[in-house]
Length: 95
Image (cartoon, rainbow, N blue to C red; front, side, top):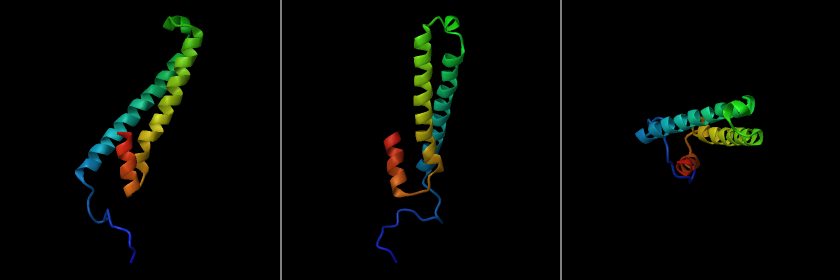
């Protein structure tokens, strides 16, 4: 027997708020994945077609790629992590 408090029981279904948070997290992951896709438009398309300076197109593309990938991973983690108290704190922080 441990002295740790029991926050979760595996035989109980999770509260409804968990489902809604997972939907939110999945939707945000999808949006950030779209940002990653949009970054390739700025990186691969001729800047003259976008009516933007070449340096600005590369900067916008690189920025969207880096930020989109980072936030995609941040929002994807709650879908993959186990049910633990520290995961709930992580979930609240990313909201």
